[in-house]
Length: 111
Image (cartoon, rainbow, N blue to C red; front, side, top):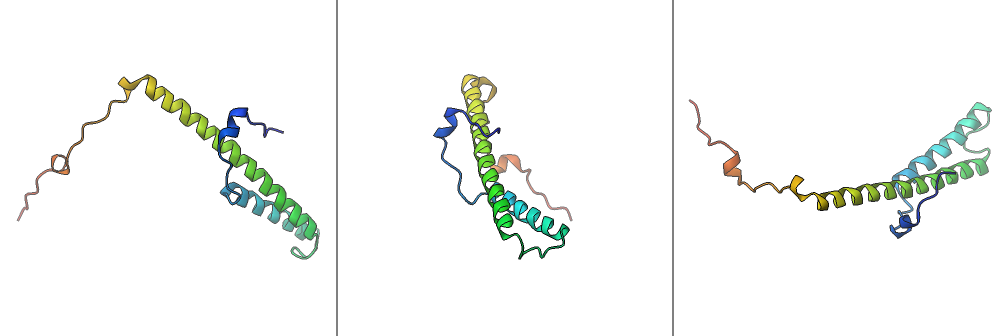
């Protein structure tokens, strides 16, 4: 189905139950069920409550797993980036620190 993650993804902490993908896709599932009721000329909120709950739960589930995939992808990218920085320190030399007085030009009022 596409939700298979490698074993190293299990080392990451699980995402929270309330995350943006779950909320968004749960709301989309709810709205799709209400839209379907409206197209079929049924009261949107009162008929097919089981379908409303089912599609909202399905959207929530898909959003949760998409968040897990997203977290793994970003963690993998960060790991690769930091390992590259460690292997090539000559490309990432820290800049010298300057004071604000060195950056800003002296102020001379003009009258």
